[in-house]
Figure 1 (cartoon, rainbow, N blue to C red):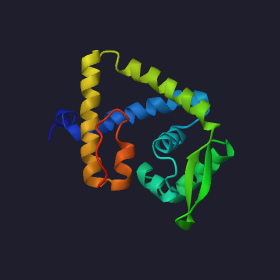
Figure 2 (figure 1 turned 45 degrees about the vertical axis):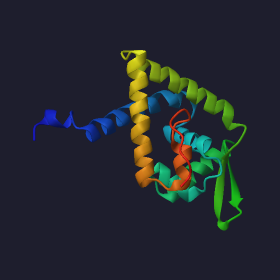
Figure 3 (figure 1 turned 90 degrees about the vertical axis):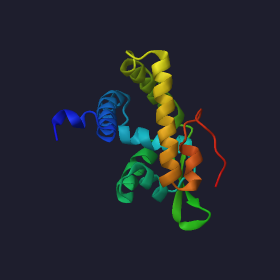
Figure 4 (figure 1 turned 120 degrees about the horizontal axis):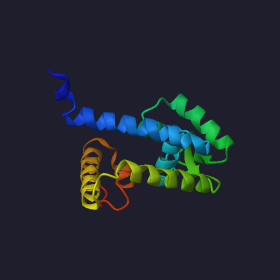
Length: 165
Protein backbone atom coordinates (compact mmCIF):
# COMPACT_ATOMS: atom_id res chain seq x y z
CA UNK A 1 0.00 0.00 0.00
CA UNK A 2 1.24 3.47 -0.85
CA UNK A 3 1.51 6.23 1.76
CA UNK A 4 -0.80 8.48 -0.26
CA UNK A 5 -3.54 5.85 -0.09
CA UNK A 6 -3.94 6.35 3.68
CA UNK A 7 -4.62 10.05 3.28
CA UNK A 8 -7.62 9.14 1.13
CA UNK A 9 -9.11 6.64 3.56
CA UNK A 10 -12.11 8.02 5.41
CA UNK A 11 -11.42 6.56 8.85
CA UNK A 12 -7.74 7.45 8.88
CA UNK A 13 -8.29 10.99 7.70
CA UNK A 14 -11.23 11.62 10.03
CA UNK A 15 -9.26 10.35 13.03
CA UNK A 16 -6.13 12.29 12.13
CA UNK A 17 -8.05 15.54 11.58
CA UNK A 18 -9.77 15.03 14.97
CA UNK A 19 -6.41 14.28 16.62
CA UNK A 20 -4.74 17.40 15.21
CA UNK A 21 -7.78 19.56 15.88
CA UNK A 22 -7.88 18.36 19.49
CA UNK A 23 -4.16 18.83 20.02
CA UNK A 24 -4.28 22.45 18.84
CA UNK A 25 -7.48 23.08 20.80
CA UNK A 26 -5.71 21.78 23.92
CA UNK A 27 -2.94 24.35 23.42
CA UNK A 28 -5.46 27.18 23.19
CA UNK A 29 -7.78 26.14 25.99
CA UNK A 30 -4.90 25.87 28.46
CA UNK A 31 -4.83 29.70 28.46
CA UNK A 32 -8.19 29.53 30.28
CA UNK A 33 -6.78 27.28 33.01
CA UNK A 34 -8.67 24.21 31.86
CA UNK A 35 -7.64 21.05 30.02
CA UNK A 36 -9.24 19.51 26.96
CA UNK A 37 -10.23 16.52 29.10
CA UNK A 38 -12.08 18.85 31.48
CA UNK A 39 -13.75 20.52 28.49
CA UNK A 40 -14.94 17.15 27.25
CA UNK A 41 -16.38 16.31 30.67
CA UNK A 42 -18.24 19.63 30.76
CA UNK A 43 -19.51 19.14 27.21
CA UNK A 44 -20.90 15.68 27.92
CA UNK A 45 -22.45 16.88 31.18
CA UNK A 46 -24.03 19.79 29.35
CA UNK A 47 -25.66 17.23 27.04
CA UNK A 48 -26.53 14.73 29.76
CA UNK A 49 -26.84 16.13 33.29
CA UNK A 50 -27.10 13.29 35.80
CA UNK A 51 -25.13 10.69 33.86
CA UNK A 52 -23.32 8.32 36.20
CA UNK A 53 -19.54 8.08 36.39
CA UNK A 54 -19.39 4.70 34.64
CA UNK A 55 -21.46 5.97 31.71
CA UNK A 56 -19.33 9.10 31.38
CA UNK A 57 -16.09 7.09 31.50
CA UNK A 58 -17.44 4.94 28.68
CA UNK A 59 -18.33 7.98 26.56
CA UNK A 60 -14.92 9.54 27.18
CA UNK A 61 -13.21 6.19 26.48
CA UNK A 62 -11.13 6.38 29.64
CA UNK A 63 -10.76 4.11 32.64
CA UNK A 64 -13.14 4.90 35.51
CA UNK A 65 -10.19 5.53 37.88
CA UNK A 66 -8.81 8.16 35.48
CA UNK A 67 -12.21 9.83 35.42
CA UNK A 68 -12.35 9.84 39.23
CA UNK A 69 -9.09 11.81 39.41
CA UNK A 70 -10.32 14.22 36.74
CA UNK A 71 -13.64 14.69 38.56
CA UNK A 72 -11.81 15.24 41.85
CA UNK A 73 -9.97 18.21 40.32
CA UNK A 74 -13.14 19.55 38.71
CA UNK A 75 -15.09 19.19 41.94
CA UNK A 76 -12.31 21.06 43.76
CA UNK A 77 -12.63 23.86 41.20
CA UNK A 78 -16.37 23.91 41.88
CA UNK A 79 -17.40 22.93 38.33
CA UNK A 80 -18.87 19.49 38.97
CA UNK A 81 -21.10 18.04 41.65
CA UNK A 82 -21.47 14.34 42.43
CA UNK A 83 -24.79 13.18 43.83
CA UNK A 84 -25.91 9.76 45.00
CA UNK A 85 -27.75 7.82 42.33
CA UNK A 86 -31.24 7.08 43.69
CA UNK A 87 -31.37 3.86 41.64
CA UNK A 88 -27.95 2.52 42.75
CA UNK A 89 -26.41 3.50 46.07
CA UNK A 90 -22.92 2.60 44.80
CA UNK A 91 -23.12 4.96 41.83
CA UNK A 92 -22.71 8.73 41.62
CA UNK A 93 -24.54 10.99 39.19
CA UNK A 94 -22.73 14.01 37.79
CA UNK A 95 -23.95 17.57 37.36
CA UNK A 96 -22.43 20.85 36.26
CA UNK A 97 -22.58 23.52 38.94
CA UNK A 98 -23.54 27.14 38.36
CA UNK A 99 -19.83 27.97 38.82
CA UNK A 100 -19.06 25.92 35.67
CA UNK A 101 -21.24 28.14 33.48
CA UNK A 102 -18.79 31.08 33.11
CA UNK A 103 -15.93 28.67 32.32
CA UNK A 104 -18.06 26.78 29.84
CA UNK A 105 -19.03 30.08 28.19
CA UNK A 106 -15.32 30.96 27.81
CA UNK A 107 -14.50 27.51 26.44
CA UNK A 108 -17.36 27.65 23.94
CA UNK A 109 -16.35 31.16 22.82
CA UNK A 110 -12.78 29.96 22.32
CA UNK A 111 -14.07 26.89 20.47
CA UNK A 112 -16.20 29.08 18.19
CA UNK A 113 -13.21 31.28 17.41
CA UNK A 114 -10.99 28.26 16.72
CA UNK A 115 -13.65 26.65 14.53
CA UNK A 116 -14.03 29.86 12.53
CA UNK A 117 -10.26 29.95 11.93
CA UNK A 118 -10.13 26.28 10.93
CA UNK A 119 -13.12 26.60 8.60
CA UNK A 120 -12.13 29.97 7.13
CA UNK A 121 -11.48 28.42 3.71
CA UNK A 122 -14.88 26.74 3.59
CA UNK A 123 -17.90 28.54 2.18
CA UNK A 124 -21.00 28.76 4.36
CA UNK A 125 -22.64 26.06 2.20
CA UNK A 126 -19.60 23.76 2.49
CA UNK A 127 -19.54 24.16 6.26
CA UNK A 128 -23.31 23.53 6.53
CA UNK A 129 -23.01 20.43 4.31
CA UNK A 130 -20.00 19.14 6.23
CA UNK A 131 -21.79 19.51 9.57
CA UNK A 132 -24.92 17.86 8.18
CA UNK A 133 -22.85 14.90 6.96
CA UNK A 134 -21.08 14.56 10.31
CA UNK A 135 -24.44 14.67 12.12
CA UNK A 136 -25.80 12.01 9.77
CA UNK A 137 -22.79 9.75 10.40
CA UNK A 138 -22.97 10.41 14.12
CA UNK A 139 -26.64 9.48 14.26
CA UNK A 140 -25.98 6.30 12.28
CA UNK A 141 -23.18 5.28 14.67
CA UNK A 142 -25.25 6.09 17.76
CA UNK A 143 -28.18 4.11 16.36
CA UNK A 144 -25.98 1.08 15.79
CA UNK A 145 -23.58 1.21 18.71
CA UNK A 146 -24.88 3.56 21.38
CA UNK A 147 -27.15 2.69 24.25
CA UNK A 148 -30.69 3.86 23.45
CA UNK A 149 -30.95 6.09 26.53
CA UNK A 150 -27.94 8.12 25.38
CA UNK A 151 -28.84 8.41 21.68
CA UNK A 152 -31.04 11.49 21.99
CA UNK A 153 -28.62 13.51 24.10
CA UNK A 154 -25.64 12.95 21.84
CA UNK A 155 -27.27 14.02 18.60
CA UNK A 156 -26.45 17.65 17.86
CA UNK A 157 -29.04 20.03 19.25
CA UNK A 158 -30.19 21.08 15.78
CA UNK A 159 -29.78 17.62 14.28
CA UNK A 160 -32.50 15.15 13.39
CA UNK A 161 -34.85 14.12 16.20
CA UNK A 162 -35.93 10.56 16.74
CA UNK A 163 -38.33 8.81 19.01
CA UNK A 164 -36.98 6.72 21.90
CA UNK A 165 -36.70 3.01 21.26
